[in-house]
Length: 206
Image (cartoon, rainbow, N blue to C red; front, side, top):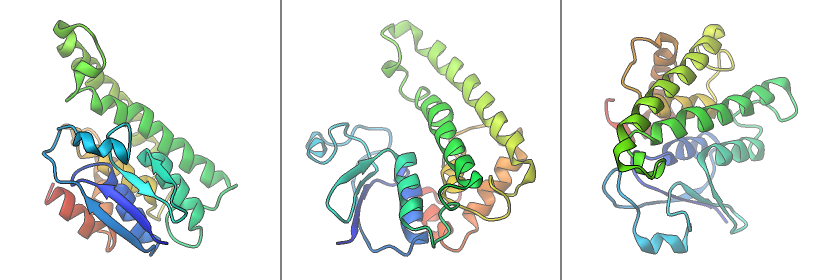
């Protein structure tokens, strides 16, 4: 049985689709038609009760959600492919460290800008949530920028799905000039023979 990826254009499933293609894994893609920044249809609860994509159905029929967790799982399942370092190595420890860091500190902060109502019960506090989130995301990206000194990718010379994930998140940050190394990482992902076509389908020339 092949993988089955549920996604919509411009969502975190971009990174999962790239990972599946880097793994040369057979998969079926179902793209949900819905407007950007809107909730998925109520009927999608039957697939994921949290009503979010990406959702990856594994070959055994079980379901995975959460982009960073899916990327780690795929890298472990396809160690012969360029998804991530071998499990048990110090490089793999850094791979997991930065994926989780990006998920917790960058992705979650980015969500507070379009969806401040999820993070406060005070309707008058939305601007404060957005401002604090923007500042915190900038601080987190600064940590990543500093870690990229050995570059051009997070773990050195070779792109892996960690870089794909970071490039995807960085597209939503308005200040590119303050992060030249992250900008170069993003360019590397956009110009990759496998990731590039998927990027253009999701994000165009951004």
